[in-house]
Image 1 (tube, one colour):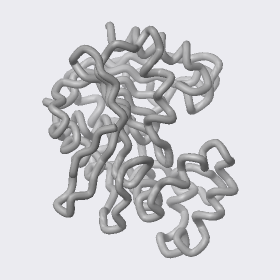
Image 2 (tube, rainbow, N blue to C red; image 1 turned 45 degrees about the horizontal axis):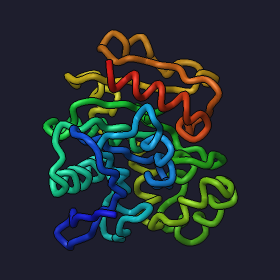
Image 3 (cartoon, helix red, strand yellow; image 1 turned 90 degrees about the vertical axis):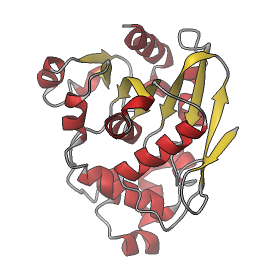
Length: 255
């Protein structure tokens, strides 16, 4: 376990670090998740093991501190990750991001280019999402005001997401969870998609085969982003199909 202060108040990001060869590989989890739980099997898979790996929890989630006074925008998440990586002596990392973690990874590469050499995005958010009360993820959480979420919405979310997701989502600070969801649904300006298209580094977008290709996949390819379908999985690619995910990620990182 490692940690580093990332805010003026000394709030700390924590990560599980696996020793290995440089350059480092950084894993970033999705909304309501935690990287050690979601990425342990991938990081230790024979196809991906042997690299210095940081399974990092975003501020407000998992093992990291949960301050209630942060905005939890995607830009702020990227900046606090950058502070943690700088404290860890990481530069030119291979960053693997799932869902919201993929969105944060894109913003990190856009705002702190010296820290990121390659991106592997696992079904990452690229565009704004309209709030939808019946849905369990960011769009559902964002449909409540923060006051409504803190006064009972969080318990409603626990019922909707089920025991697997709730097992890690319950660790998130309530304010962090709601504000992160709101900003994820709102997206950045420019959007994460536009940032991704403008990056000058190797980029791969992994998506579940059953869901079909992401929106404007041809536009991603035209900008040099590899778009790869993974069979036998849903949104949690690395958990549903760990061997397939490790093979696809290893191929992306070797390309």
